[in-house]
Image (cartoon, rainbow, N blue to C red; front, side, top):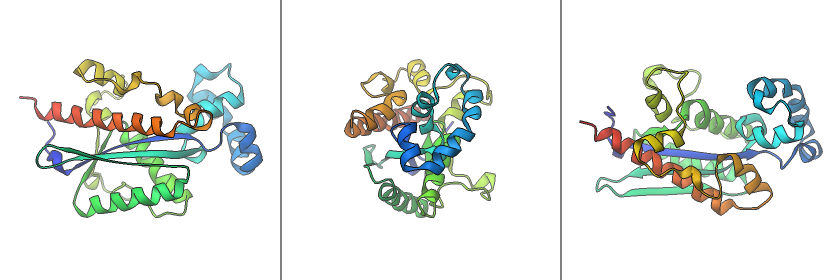
Length: 233
C-alpha cells in the first residue's frame, strides 16, 4: 500500500499557538495583525459556527493557532526509521520562531538532497502551508522539500495519512485520534497537553517541554501507522 521505503520517509508534526496570548496583547504589540483579525472575524465565525457565542478574544485564543497569518510555530518534531528499524527523532522548540524555523529548514534541506518524502496527518492542508508561510513571514526561503504553487503533482513528495485514511472520500471523518483508536495504536490525545490546549499551555502555563513531548507522541503514532500499512498482506 505504501511503496516508498520507510527509511526514506521523514515523519513530521508541528505545534502552533496564536501569535499573541490574547487579542488585547495583539492590539498592543501587533496592531496591524489585530486589525486583520477584526476584518476576518466573520470568516472565523463561518468557518467555526460552533464558536458563534464566543467573544472575539475567545475566538482569537481558540482559533488563531490554526491560521498561519495569526499563528506562531513553537515546536516541530521529526523522525525517520534507520535501516535496522531504530526510530531516530529530532525536536525543535523554543520562544524564537525564526531560529526554530531556520533549524527546521536546514534538516528539511538535508532530507531533500537525500530524496526523502514528508509524512504527516493533514500534512498538505496544515503542516506544509503553515511551515512555508511562517518561514516566508520570518524572512526565510522555504525548503524545496515543501511543495509550492509550481510543484507538479507528480513531484510532490508528501504522504498525508489523513488522505490515506479517507481513501478518496474527502467528506469522511479522519482525525489522528480516530485512526489510532481503530488501528489499535495508543492515542497521543489523552495526555495533559493536547492540540486544543497548546495555546493555553504555552502562553499561560509555560509548558513548552510538555508541548514538545506531545508533538513527539504524534510523530511516534505516524511511524506506527505507516508500519501497520506496510505490513498489510
